[in-house]
Image (cartoon, rainbow, N blue to C red; front, side, top):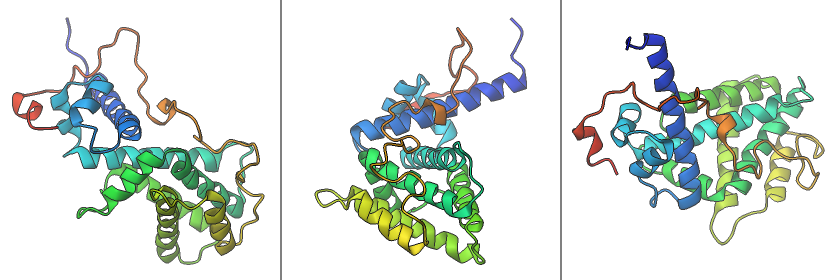
Length: 239
């Protein structure tokens, strides 16, 4: 049997990482952060347990990367959905609705994510977070910002604060109140984006199938993850 080419091995590595990201989002959303182990995530992804550390330094980095991927792809899907709009105000409305919808529809996952950001390491500077940041900066710029370096962090902070308010246990704020405040700040019309109660589905809302956000497609009969090395030191102590 001839050895696989470098391009095939690279594709297998990419799919393996995608499966881990998807499994992390699913399991933390179902069980919470503390009740989810790296072994659980590897089992759900169909990967060898020791391979998790090949891609990620630890559980928090994996989970943050996974949630940032979900946020990035949800935001991208909302902003670019049909009918596509080049109107900066409409695109910002869609962006706000996309992020708020995650707080409404995936409260366990987003609560764990917000709690993770308050840990000492804060943001994990991973490619997923950087793509999310780039897309939000583009939204702010298309809205007409003359100071994206200042306006982007402000919008990010306001969205984070709104999500935090939505997922706060026992006293969550309603999405309509938070949306109204954000739309007022950015001078957006209520009818823009996807107004709550309009009957139109926000990107990803109420959808349990997240596979479209994680490129994990496989050829029939392909075994996952055979390309990576593993060793006993990686397979132990990683829960």
